[in-house]
Length: 253
Image (tube, rainbow, N blue to C red):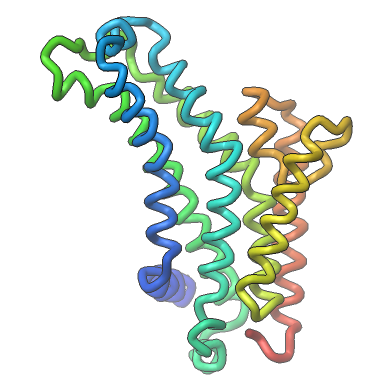
């Protein structure tokens, strides 16, 4: 366990030198900043909006409509590809594998860091949406504080649903990142699958496509519980396949 924790700490430090950190911060704050900018632009409506009982409900749907359909899946594709390819770009795979760590520990540590970055992105997004609602009241005296209490549980459940919906994308991108040396290859495949999922969204059997769950949830507002089971199943399947291919690969990276 101590080796795993040290490996996670090492991977966490390494990601500071990549664009993945900035993409995580940008991905979590971009939509709230846009919504805040729109609200401030229509400043004459702020008092009425903050006095309404459905303020947080509207902010939730506005935020996740853009975040879930576009930024979250694209962000997962970019960040997973970047983190997985850190050693490839710096020619450091051989150095990593001479350290006293088993391949299993390295595999799990990298996956853990990617999941942590995804959680950080979701946390930033939720904090950003909250600030979008309360910040105008801090800077404008004639704008009241939102009368409706912040629905923490709704936002927590919603974030968990989008997390589950994005897990297949993360696992398949992780598999590709470990399999291919070229950063552009997993990135291109991931973006291609995302575009194909957008086109296939109206299809009767769209729920069989692993990259489609985030946009389905953002588009419909709710999806059947069986879809989350499929999403988790894809994550386990792709994760196990990635692990087998990684530990059996003769020349890792």
